Length: 177
Image 1: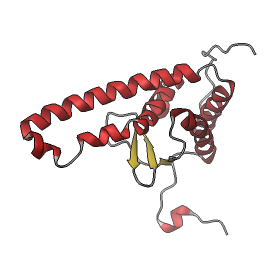
Image 2: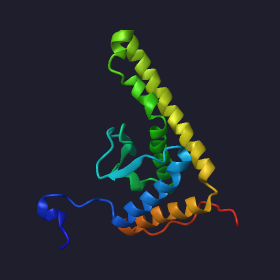
Image 3: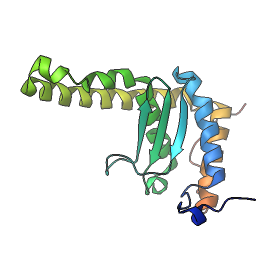
Image 4: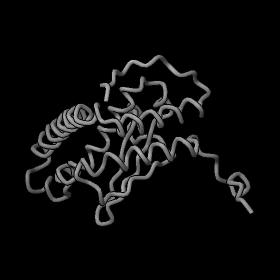
């Protein structure tokens, strides 16, 4: 017998099964190339930590598991922006050990509170800029890959089906094989 989530107090996921499967396939294709094939990345039906973020990722070390959160307006962004936000979040996994340095609890005691605040703000800004630059490099690397584009098209198609949105005109140019 199939379980009805509403019967046990769970709200239905805002993501269709087709979208989850398509996104999982896309991520599965990308992560080996990013050097993080051991990571399990799950789509979490929750808003990003920052209310201004289109997406965020929460990493659990020791188990190499990450939870990807997409904002409720994520699907309002154009396809290329969605792709960039996702690649940006995956790039955070690549750089996560550097991110954890800034959160090292004894660092504020070693540096002093004022010095730590300056360090932390500059470190976070530099890390975000680096992550964003890496996302651009990764997208440039993948953009002409036939499988990558087929998988991304499935993600977009699943989103359109789930939201009832008509398909936009093709804007991405593909090289002829």
